[in-house]
Image 1 (cartoon, rainbow, N blue to C red):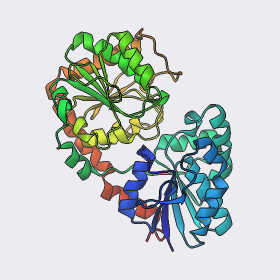
Image 2 (cartoon, rainbow, N blue to C red):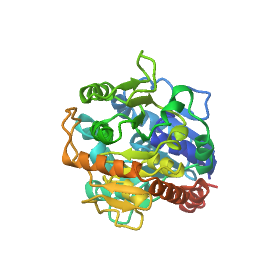
Image 3 (spheres, rainbow, N blue to C red):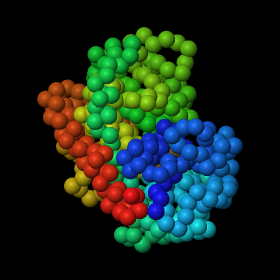
Length: 402
């Protein structure tokens, strides 16, 4: 009656971080990754594949599945996260009869486009229904599988992500190193996430350019890496915003407008000193960064995108609703979602972006409101505490995870 957790890799993305956190809490017999170097906490199914592109790794699903099948048997449960790991889990279960429990952590209909979508989407439709149990980390993700991949309504169980609140708050108490500490003497707007099309950082930069007109000393900090870094830096220049690039050669002065701080393993010392967390995503699964911001007592202004933010920030409302005007929540604001478009790096600010700037300026000018929101954020974060979520996972996996 063994129990194992499987994820693509130990790269620090949201799903990988969540899998590692659950591995600590659920104490599986093995924490497996598809590939990677040996000797770490995670055990790789294969080592020589780690340098290959993701598309090629998808063609090697049966190779990974044979490796997983060799390590499991009919009485075992394997819990997997992310599409390739889910495919491998199901394929291995075909041959050895183990219990495949898969978790969808994004919206495949929007996440996968082009050639990648033509490969991934049919595999989801074909393989996911074979799992013994299908989970999603948000109601929105479950809805996506129902509407676009043939799942019957109610078949998918939803369990929200966990957060190590005690660990987050311990890190939040640390002081940012060097010049970063000086930046937070200014009113800082912060965001965290990969610099990709889904996050729409180009909109946040145009919003911030408007904020600067009303709050000249404001600063914007972006935490994360991604393929749009250079285009976003170029947009800063076009908007007249001085930008610091942690990957560039120029040293930080602390007087810049926008700070591309790169990936931070522990962003919480930044979160706890910022004024507002701004989240302009076009779509999400269930954003860990928003949960972590709440745990740090950081008020959130978020696009009411599909899906995740509404479930986190306005849990008493219909998760399928979408704000048509700025919507007050106990922890901040939900804003009308942006139209899903390819990245656009022009400097013209539209009406929706100007509305964001107006609302951010209102927040920055209202210290009592921010203090009230901070307390509510800390309270809301308790719903995602690791002990609470661990108990929920044990309930889902009862008889299999012990």
